[in-house]
Image 1 (cartoon, rainbow, N blue to C red):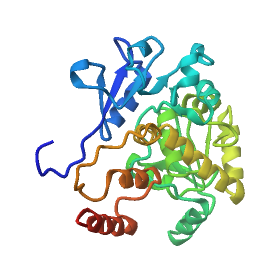
Image 2 (cartoon, rainbow, N blue to C red):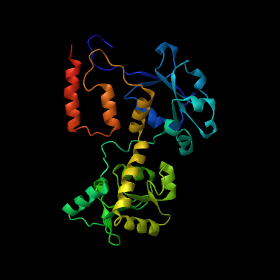
Image 3 (cartoon, helix red, strand yellow):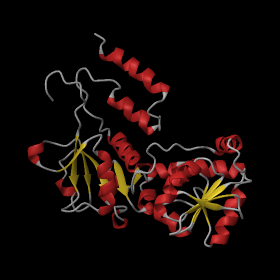
Length: 304
């Protein structure tokens, strides 16, 4: 850091992932770059603040350094598994075995600027825009989307799909990527067992599962007249999308490891720790609370 700079210094996260990182770890590593410097362990780079390691690479971690352990099923119950501050895995059973220390490996960026729209807000949106109360959205594998009332659905242009996801009473989709986008919008969602398993979604807590087109349509139709079930699915589904999102997972890992950016003597507002907490809470970038916190931390930064 040069003299007078107010930019926070990113901490070093050592990587001990053997010669090639697990493919499932790549989205997380990309998401971490905003908050730290993930780099292969190298004495010339200095001692890392924490280490992300696999079982094969754990012996490379410097003594006493906080460890996030990338675990496979065979690692459950091992000394490394028990000692790790955070256990990261793409295997839901491993994450469950780690309890509160478990962190699901993300698969991509799904939350971003998407915000969950709860069913009671959806109902108002449909009423104000003259959309049928039981309007839903359905993905036809390899054949686009349809929108409308059950039995009277019509094709929908791709550029309108995500707008519809924020308003419809239910979404039917069996492609994992689109499934997570639907959940990120807080849409009560019906899918297949295979798609649910692909994103780690738990049925019937986070999604409803149907194994045929007819069964999925029947389940979605039932959701349009069950506001309590729709509300439960909306919140639980959004939380699943958060867990599978690379940016959110990266922020969670940083928070658990205490790996906040190193603050210079006069940090630029908002302070890194505050910014991290706001984003973990899903606070929109244009929210009034951000403006108020920026003003407050600016006063702190200039205090004697």
